Amino acid sequence: MLQLVESGDRIVLSVRVQPRASRNAIGGEWQGALNVRLTAPPVGGRANQALCRLLAERLEIPVAAVRILFGEHSRTKRVEVRGTTAERIRALVETSSRPAG
Image (cartoon, rainbow, N blue to C red; front, side):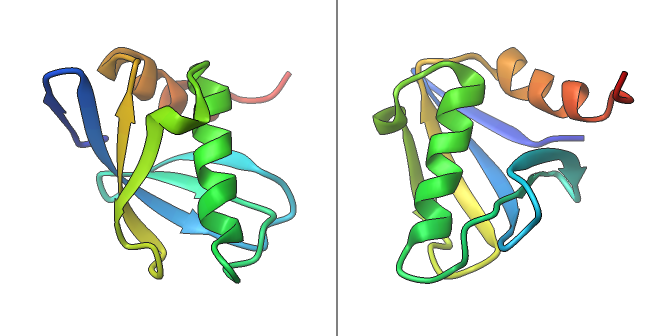
């Protein structure tokens, strides 16, 4: 189950990133973290920027509302999100696990 920490107007979650994937996608849950595939390489912060853009797009919030707290150079990151709800973040996992069609 996706582990979220709510504090005031922010939500902190773990994200497991797979850079250089064939497409940008949210791949469900992985050991309590949101599993995210990104086409960007992990060079020069491009995968981190792509992660923030993807989460902002899927949650329909500004990119500035998504911030990496820890793990900028790691596949497992702690990410802070503002301007959304825990339910919307959990919905990302649910929609990623549905079969296409």
